[in-house]
Length: 199
Image (cartoon, rainbow, N blue to C red; front, side, top):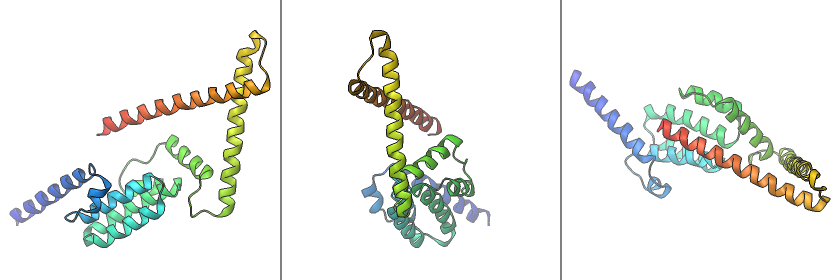
């Protein structure tokens, strides 16, 4: 009985290593995968959810569950729940689904960002009212950012005699774009460092 258990353990370890190797492959290579079809489709579903493409993610996970062995289906369903919650920007459901997967839940900052994105850019399945609300919120956010940029530019230019409204708005726009660019660059560096630390 012991040699058989050892053989199963070796097969499981080999399968896990093969699945990790699949994550490095391109989408086209994963589509053509035959040996670990369900794992390849689940990875494609997770990638689609990271692009917030809920329809494609759902299709990949349905195919992955159909191709999976019975003992793999529960884990793929849990993975699908987490990925679809991300794609559809459902922060509360994402936290529960990630915990069911046995992973650390997203941080408070990540949950806030997902909720904000859900309000600003609702999923395709959301109703017309949610989409209109998102458009109005984006317009309000742009106006607030421009007002902040204009205020800062006017404050800086006061010792030099001040600026007119049109040049102030233009310089405020450039200032807002520069600040957002710096924030995006810093965020990308932090994300890359975190990925290197976990990888």
